[in-house]
Length: 247
Ligand code: CA
Image (tube, rainbow, N blue to C red; front, side):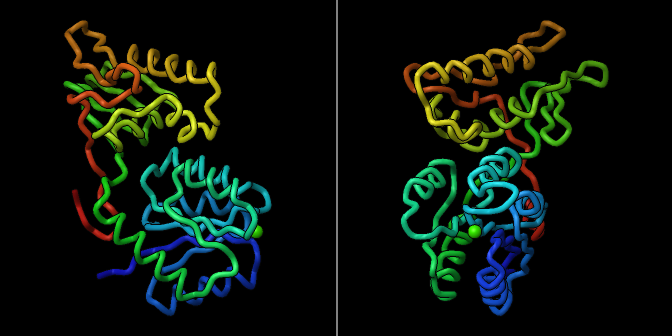
């Protein structure tokens, strides 16, 4: 089994060195970054299988990195590296979609065990969706485009794309407005803000309506008192991972 590629985002040189060496010695390919901005760019690269993410980082906070990363790679496994006494951050990180955390100082052995466990779990997970079909429309997430024919296209925003992608990736369940808010915007749900989600959904539904007037299947279903869910006719076209495994 190919061990995979891991991105290490940690500003403390000694800690980063230790992690990188341990991973390489085990056979992983490793990329590394010492600040949040570079970290986000590295982590979002195709081919990365898992991210080790420190929270206190120069230039961009670890939680911001996580939130932005989730928009482009919603299913990429992320393990948070955290100092003691920062339970709030840890909980926020897990709520925002981190898969696990390790508390500093940790041993190389513990870290490697976590990495291995998360990668094993991720292998059975839906892959990142790069495109979808809805009736005869094709929704392309890389190009931010909805296309019915060569002539009929619509643009959609990054947020609308992230929303649609998140529903698709979790298509087996209804997602509450609160979860959508915290996963996509990193906001803690407080009453009125959840209406933001309804507005985005309404706009997206409009854009997904067939301009020729033929009946379009429903892309997003409203599940009463639960939230939103991908409709049965919204079908993901799954991406191929860098290790050559195709869906
Ligand atoms: Ca740090």
